[in-house]
Length: 240
Image (cartoon, rainbow, N blue to C red):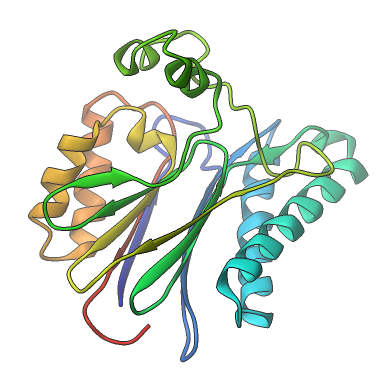
């Protein structure tokens, strides 16, 4: 596996995104988290979520689906408990999207609207489902995907890590093969770039670090006003 990750503060006063690139002899995993809350609280929430996820996966990954589910439960508990202990952090939370990478498949999970895409060399497919107000309207057919981009409540998420005592993650198990890529990102990227444009960058990817940087720069020129985080995982044919 080959990995790359970049994060950019953009036009925000601080960067509340966090990401994970985890590579050991027995485990490969990636994650992105986008924080929300008061002053610095979002930054703390996303960092806690990613750190807890890493700790949990390193301690138990024999059953990838169970391990990822347990890691998300613990991440929610840690963020929620920290918020409950400090008035300045009350209500803080974050999105979380992550994947465990195996030789012939990947196990992904998400809470919130940070996304995971699978690129097979030609088509880019969004694997995760956004937990957001506008995504639900699109699923119901009440608005179109184009209308969702400018909807006044497009930043309202309906499920987050840490805002409630219990929250469930969506879990996905998908096949992948040599040459395939996974892209994880916060909405600072996918909120302004559509799938065909993202796919064009991945199709021409020779250097994953450079591709992450190019996607972030393109999102900025396209008008993104949010923190922007991009993580790439490339299946190079080696064992996970």
